[in-house]
Length: 367
Image (cartoon, rainbow, N blue to C red; front, side, top):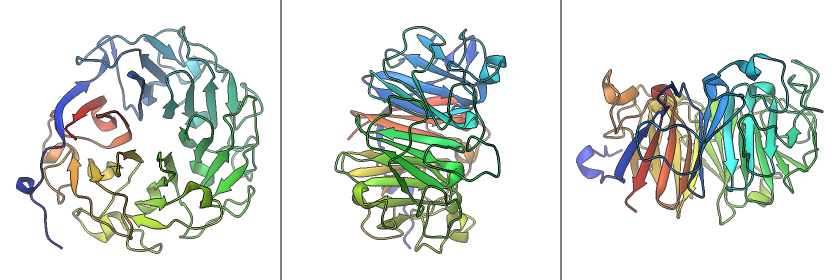
């Protein structure tokens, strides 16, 4: 396989901004980053809070307009140092918003929270909880570890996505995707379909199923990608409507369903390998993949038609054969990454939760 060098790879970003949150209470291992109508949402995961900036920041530090999960913007306790409730968070991760509504994967409370109108005050209570019968409950699959899932339960949900009408939840710990035909209006709503399992009660799996689905995304054309972290691959369905009844059409990162090696059992990465991938994001006709373990974000200019496709470019590394944090240095630089998690695009802007560097990277793309 031909090695693509730095000289052969044109720059993808015309401007990069490093953003670290509030200078008085900066970000710590943020896993969620989302853009909607120029609002920036950040899940400051290790500090159990979610920040909202009403305008995309333009400097390294900027105070947030709102915090959720805590009553004060400087607080950081798990479930706000209290019992779980409608306003608390415990390891928030994936985010979705259309600028008017907000949905958050509250992963370690084993639930998804929905605000049907955009919060206007710090610590605003959520309107709806999924995965639990009420806001005071937070056990995996409702009854605790070892209990089987059902159409209403969740176990470590890390990813959420909506097209504005429907909702998909990456129910990671149950190794499945839950599908809701409408964004739920009521607590403990049952999912309409399950993807990756034959029924709602099954948790066992084989290599053709999502093994550890961390995120789910839907393109404007109807394609669906599931970032399957534990098997170091991304699963692509050409039409999300078929996903509940069939295996993925294309595998990115592995040659076949049996493949499950980090960088396909190579020490160094290549243009077609993945290592602890955590998110994917559609952009124009192509796809970005957060190849977190290789500290890079891969770019595919078209959706792959065959397994094991090569990316054509990347962010975070100078070439496809480097996979160390911050480009083989001990220093964080503008162009480097350290385990990027959620990625999101709006217009020509890509934001990435650069988790290991405790920051958000905002890229103004040049295409």
